[in-house]
Length: 274
Image 1 (cartoon, one colour):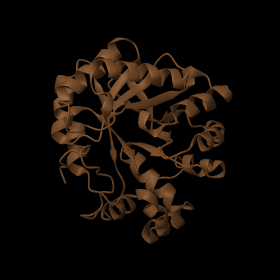
Image 2: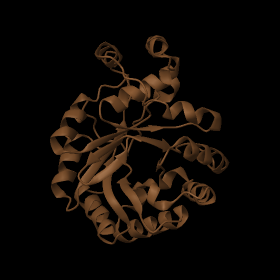
Image 3: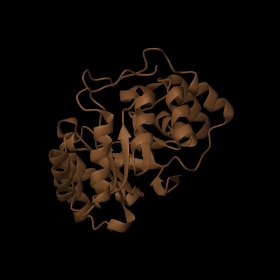
Image 4: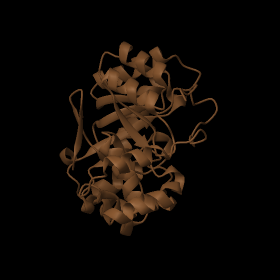
């Protein structure tokens, strides 16, 4: 598996996310993901399936040293004692002593970024996570987080797909030495149905979904794939045996549109840069 190197972390470039999956779906699909070669698994407290992921990995006999596990702290835990307690609960559910990457899930509008970063650093210093990062921050928040954090901020996990122009964040993250992790890479089902992406895929013997994931990986992003169907897992990971041309990349980049953002919950999302 290709990796992204950032501030001492080696993060598998393609991860398997379990957003909007039931416990049964997680426990059915994770063995197939492991068999296909996935080692990077991404969950969150609010997903309600950390325990299912922990059970599935344990039952499959996955070796802890071969895994890269990410989870996220929900916004209602953004005070010191609840924050630390919620991380302990996450570790118990995942059946591990520490995760590889712990993220702040949303910046929200109730707790200062400085306080959020202080709590994140405290649990990292306590050995509960190897690396720390953020999610859904705008450019100003990311710069503030990087400036305030004692430990390196290794990623900002954000909505990233062909229909959303994230160039302001791409430039800011590069300037700060922070990786970007892409979620919603399929744009809630729009990417696999896109006629232009289907045509590009046909030239490479690949699906539109594979083209969408390859477009992310080829830009140096970390991409989260997802499927609840074990029979589809192998397709998701088969993106390292072809290369999109410069013309392909440019054409996909032109799909961005003003209404491309799909995820922006009130009270959680910041003022976006675009």
